[in-house]
Amino acid sequence: MNDTTTREIVTLQSHILAQQAKNPQSTGTLSWILSALSISAKVIADHVRRARLADVLGKAGAENVQGEEQQKLDVISNDVLMRVLGGREGVAIVASEENEEPVIIRSDTEGEQRYCVLFDPLDGSSNLDVCGSVGTIFSILRYDRRAASPEESLLQPGDVQVAAGYILYGPSTVFCLSMGEGVDMFVLDISVGAFLRVEQGLRIPTASKNYSVNEGNRLGFPEGYQRYLDWAQQNGYSSRYAGAMVADVHRTLLKGGVFMYPPTVKAPNGKLRLMYEANPMAMLIEQAGGKALAGRADDGSEQRILALQPKDIHERCPVVLGSPDEVDHVTRHL
Ligand code: AHG
Ligand code: MN
Ligand code: MN
Image (cartoon, rainbow, N blue to C red; front, side, top):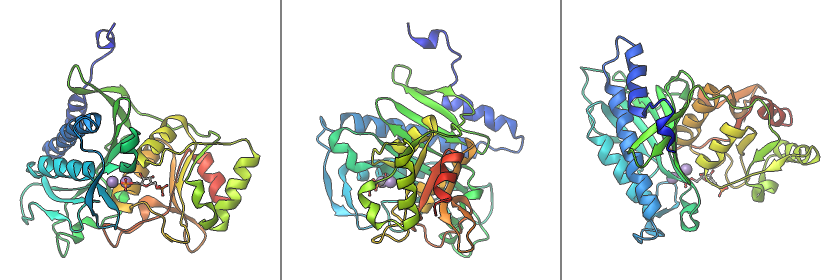
């Protein structure tokens, strides 16, 4: 039996409209942007599913701004998001991992509130060739017309994100979203053609003996992280690492544990990008009751990812996020 016959059916679309209705001042602009993300996700999911058959696996033959080799599907996914978001009235600026410069779509100085959308169109793209999970990550900020330049309008700390989320293209396509009031989860029902809500107000487990990190880099980590790994291994922890942030964070959100990308000798700020990888994931994790840190600040206090002031849209930061108790176990070793 198809469980749409027994379960309450709430689509992502109706969920967003219901959220919007709670705020009498809302104009519906943000809802349109989220609907653009949902359409893009369905198109990208289809490309990912058919990748081998459509012969779009492999390298695109170019490098992105990070000097990383682009896969054909990185380019396709970026193009889908750019085109769908570009057509939405409410979008002022779009910034992507795959574009060195942000794309200014509308930079008018008056009128209704517009938004900036930052995204990693395809996260974990090296997993594609082996049919592993990949994802899309996005962050939505208010467009600040008072900023000195449109680009500068983007450089806002994660704490002021209006909404953030990810789409996981795995055995099913999962959309996790936060609009600042908890985290809700939707699964794409292909027969219906819509994301259906499967979980509301998701909470991350407080503790769970799992860590997720690329241990091949261990000798390049600062000593504190190495001491944590010694401690975890002496205390019966399991290790899980997909090599795609969306897949690793999704597992951490549902099952608990800690996901990390620490600094390394080669990459002193880690590998993950603050504005379209770390910030959106940190918002989801905090909204689900977890902790998301970039390590310790110079004064020894815990550095929340969401409190970092970005200086560049492509900057990187160390990431330690997950169950509150598990993040604490890491920080007490740092
Ligand atoms: P992207 O495919 O968008 O460049 O991101 C890859 C990232 C992230 O998904 C993952 O957590 C990390 O790279 C894995 O890096 P390592 O291979 O260095 O572990
Ligand atoms: Mn990524
Ligand atoms: Mn990517």
